[in-house]
Length: 240
Ligand code: ADP
Ligand code: MG
Image 1 (cartoon, helix red, strand yellow):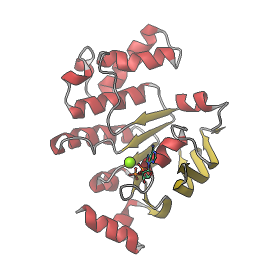
Image 2 (cartoon, rainbow, N blue to C red; image 1 turned 90 degrees about the horizontal axis):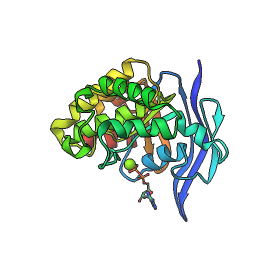
Image 3 (cartoon, rainbow, N blue to C red; image 1 turned 180 degrees about the vertical axis):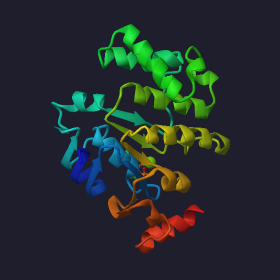
Image 4 (cartoon, helix red, strand yellow; image 1 turned 60 degrees about the vertical axis):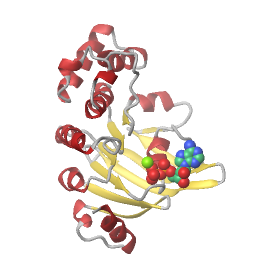
């Protein structure tokens, strides 16, 4: 089984504040890993640090057989699709151009190839007809689907999503989860921070519980029904 992400003893700090305290994690090709954990437990920092959006203090990260370093960072980032809580689309660019520009500028595609890929990605998230709209003309759910399309268009080896639905109005959450479920079924390797238990039960191969910058517990999604640790049990209780 091919390992796409391999993390060893990862440590991340903001100045003297230690946030990720020695995390090991392997993600296999096609695997869907859901990360849960209380606010402030270091989930976002962990995910961001995998592509050095926050630079780790210690540890090693290998993505698609490339050890992340200042020398390899650009190559690594080309292989990772990243979706943020707040979409991070360029408001002054049309939907299609939000997707096309990185494909041209970062991935070196021709405009024609990039447009074709972008339209294909928009089709996957059901938004082909919004290609020429501006982000702010779309609902939050649609904007997040564009952000997902942008991440998919680079044909990533792994898709990383940091609470992709937590900024959305409740009625918009389902359409985004549905899109993510469809993408998961296509075999994309995914690392997702989310507290959507039903989604995790349907989609995840593994659930990882984070607390205090460490992995406290992990296992198949049925650990959501029978957590082994008190801390995970308490956390899950508070979700309902
Ligand atoms: P989570 O995503 O699990 O809520 P975060 O990774 O966002 O956790 O935050 C973990 C800890 O790091 C928190 O104490 C938070 O205040 C702190 N933190 C997050 N980002 C920064 C930053 N850019 N500078 C300083 N501290 C930060
Ligand atoms: Mg977070």
